[in-house]
Length: 362
Ligand code: DNO
Image (cartoon, rainbow, N blue to C red; front, side, top):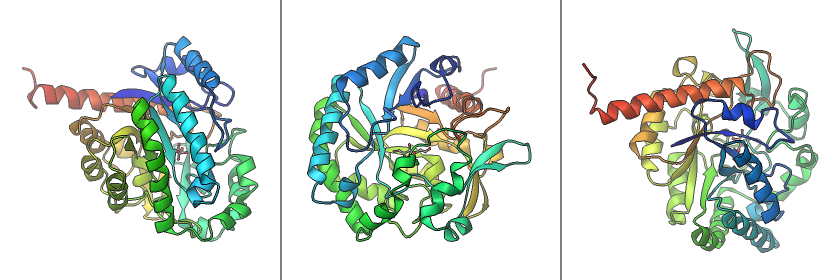
């Protein structure tokens, strides 16, 4: 595996490439053209400039998160083929610049959903949190406004103000899209892009829905073992793969994370590894990466990735806000650096004990 960090580009991120480069064991970033709108064609020049900037810092671009999908594709509207053609051109340009991993999601209206961006914990750190009660009590149009004050002046992925200004019309667009239709639209999209992915060996890695159940009545299709395996079978091409995000699949306590990883052997191309702490099954907050701080057994998650021979990029995911850092919620430097170091430690221990056949020296 390759340890990486997500980086939004120097115009948008509070964390610098130099800082990332100094985290032991982190050799790459997962990045994007953060200001590109869904449906826009990414030019080779912009992709190359992004790569050159990252490489000048001594890091590599390990993958793109995300190339976002236009709503016309998700809803299957008449003009979807035009947007799919644009997406294909972006993939071609990425391929020509040697980039081979694309993380994307197929969530309607909202990308990941949290109801608090700065819930204070007992040690004074703050974390992102979700309670179903808060969602149930909220008008979706007010969702953005309810959390905007806690964004620390940053733009959060999937929560761009221009997009949030259109929430009402977005809901309108999705009103006839149920789970089966959304799934069929995803399969249609994947089938159209597989030839270009094969040509350039680009791995598409779908990010799960977060949380793993319907919010505001919107359909959810990438949320459990059955549904992700259904997608792998529906488009049975090695370039149709998975971003395994423990914090997203893990929002549902019905998901057995190590078991899901094992069942997706050979199709996981990217991993987001983080922990959650549950107060009730529908009220959870994001924890430090360490197993004992949350609900998940992080050793078992990393061990499952190791056992299936996972060799793609892995990244610590949302971190707590600690040490008075002011950054994009979930995406500060300090706690993610601690997370990367912890995950590297787990990996090293698992690898060494495997190579020694489980024996200790002595
Ligand atoms: C949130 C992220 C998501 C993710 C997209 C992938 O922190 O995990 O925004 O990047 O859903 O397209």
